[in-house]
Length: 89
Image (cartoon, rainbow, N blue to C red; front, side, top):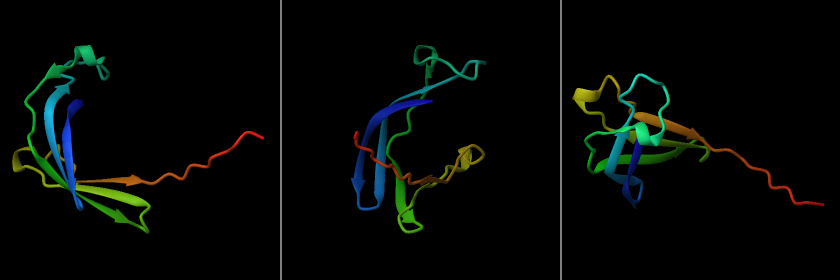
């Protein structure tokens, strides 16, 4: 899936407004962007953001539509990665 659009962040709420939604409707597991098909966009999706475990995990929570509940993932968690910066000696 490939999405384009814009967003507004207000406090811990993120409002996503899709302008384009492309999806792989073919049989191949991977398809170049040119091979994706345009499907209906989902306008104004609101998700909430929360940091957990001493701000090491970002959770994104959304409300699932009853029609799409079988394919909806209501909570997505992202672990923070620590990057070490090395300077040349």
